[in-house]
Each structure stands twice: as structure tokens, then as C-alpha cells.
Image: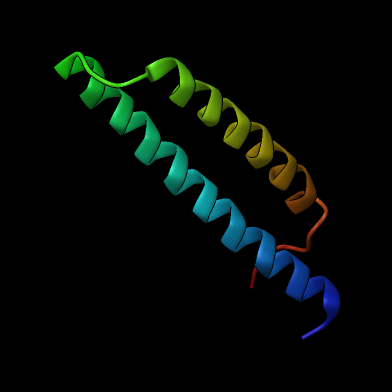
Length: 68
């Protein structure tokens, strides 16, 4: 496996992890808002940060060859 292939595989795993974490946090916000507890503002900041990271990963993935 070439270095480019390794890098792209790592980026794909990172992308999957970021998407899962963003979805989990968004679900937590929905639950906390429904229950009236928690600090959704801070969680929204974290989600925004993760979304920014995901956008950067997506930009890098655009440079990768298509998956087989």
C-alpha cells in the first residue's frame, strides 16, 4: 500500500469517526433540549469545531483516488 493510499484510508476512517461523533452530539442536544437540561450552546460550539474539521478532511479526500 502506497503512502497516498495509507493517507487516504486514514482520512476515510477519520471522516467516518467525525460524522458519527457529530451525529451523537446532535442527538444529545435534542435529548437535553427535550429534557430541559445541559448546555446546548457549548455542545453546538463543539459540533461546529468538528464540522470544520470534517470539511477540511473532505477537502483532503477530494485529492484522493477513488476507492476500489
